[in-house]
Length: 304
Image (tube, rainbow, N blue to C red):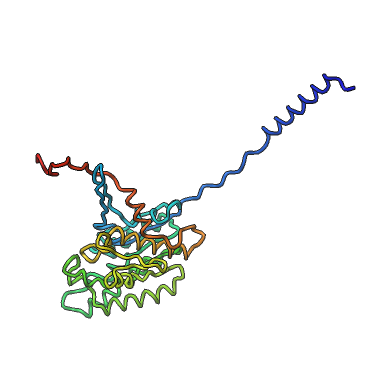
């Protein structure tokens, strides 16, 4: 017969060993955090968010915000963290070679994994490039300036998504001066050169911004991953100056750019075919309260 004291001791020993084994077990491995994707943004006033403001009047006040390309890209990418070096500048038109060169150098220094350059080449083609009353020299100088823009982009070995040159003649007399508008033949020549140059640089993907602008003017739609995103009276895609994007327009363009970058590098984990309507909803959710609503029956400027 086994004595009770022996059973008690055996049970106590087993319990202790079990507890010890439980304590010594290694912890469950945790999934590593996704490192932010380093993105450089180059461009002119569209990428800089010129006039790109969104506002909503809600029950407790007016909410608004201005959106740059660097603000819109995270809204497209959702949970995919981004680290953005934003060098877009509305001042590109004043001196594209100097401003554009400095911006490219700053982005290059940030060691990006990808570069978004929607309207970076715009002022390397648009603007005055030569002496007055000498159109031949002007056009020759224009193309030489455009080559300098390509040379800046050639410094990047990572994926670069760049827009081609659109016909923005409808903006002449509004935001553009007639002297800043290149001949359509020069735009065609610049785009042909861009296509040929991109073939020599396999890291470059060209977004047909010229086609998108034609669609906006003619059909008031933008194609995003094969789907049509239409403008409405309440939500236009171009501002009244016929040059700059509205928040909805910038959201659509940002979806196209992210889709191109996702195709170039699937390992980046970027979303494909993002819905601009969903991006706009995220943009609205990010608006900041600016003013309180006026009291009922009292004008907003009463007492001033």
